[in-house]
Image 1 (tube, helix red, strand yellow):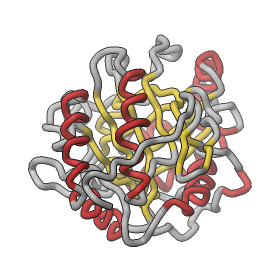
Image 2: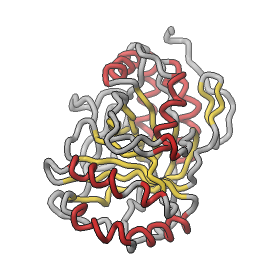
Image 3: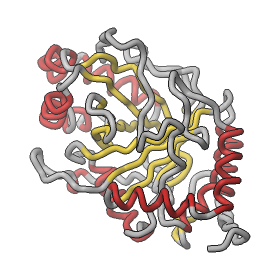
Image 4: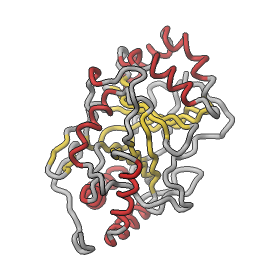
Amino acid sequence: MTDDTVPRANNCNKNCYIEEGTLMSAVRYPVVELRQYTLQPGQRDVLIDLFEREFVESQDALGSYVLGTFRNADDPDRFVWLRGFENMETRRSALEAFYTGPVWQSHRSEANATMIDSDNVLLLRPHAGSLPNDASARPAVGAMLPESLIVATTYFLAPHGEGDFAAFFTRDVAPYLAKTGGAPFATFVTEHSPNTFPRLPVRENETVFVSLARFESADAHAAQVRALEAWPAWARVAATVAQRARAGGDIAPAADGAFAVALAASMVRGAALRQAQGNATASVRANAQRRLPEPVEGRRLRGRPTCRRGRRRSKA
């Protein structure tokens, strides 16, 4: 690819995404939570064992669907998961049923003992891509972990600026990612509806755009970094991203204004992401995987901090 060969996305509405000729359907769940927990040192596997054993099928049965569970690959005390709902009212009723029900009541003390903070939650709605749900594809507890990574990139924007940024991303950013082998398989924007279950706080004053991309391995992910950085035109696109995005917390953003987090699957028991990963393999190349430019302080991957460390916040 030469510098003057600038890819362009095909025409598509806000509910689809063109990826190398493939039209991806809208995400199945209109409401999605991106939840990042800061845990007590050394307690992540304790929580994961409990979560995978007790909190997956029990939530699914109530209409609160566990779409994916992950380890933050760069922070040993960060647990990340995605949860989907059919609508905001279903979210309210499902969460009420779960957090007042017998499963959570029986295990809440054990779960909360592992946590420092569980309030770093973004409430999202789908922009493009696909997270199909197939419970039959969910591995059993104790299944072998895959080597693949999911990279979640969060762009923090001006209030209610997600529409313009989403159009810019689809038109000017996504084609570069696709051409270098790492098009996102799903993207999301902020859901601005009031929190229907205030017992679980969400970051209601944030406006974000979130992309999820799959990589076969950490090495493949690093290769994508090199592929993008070797393309001179990408530097101009990244500079524009930085102008449109803002710092989203207590740490400096990456050079392009975004926060990229590598998520190694905890057990990939969320059926939706399990299937979505399989569907995405056609656009993944072993020698050219995606990542946005390196963080300014040189860390390979990182997540955002949660609120004040040392203050434990119960999930419910």
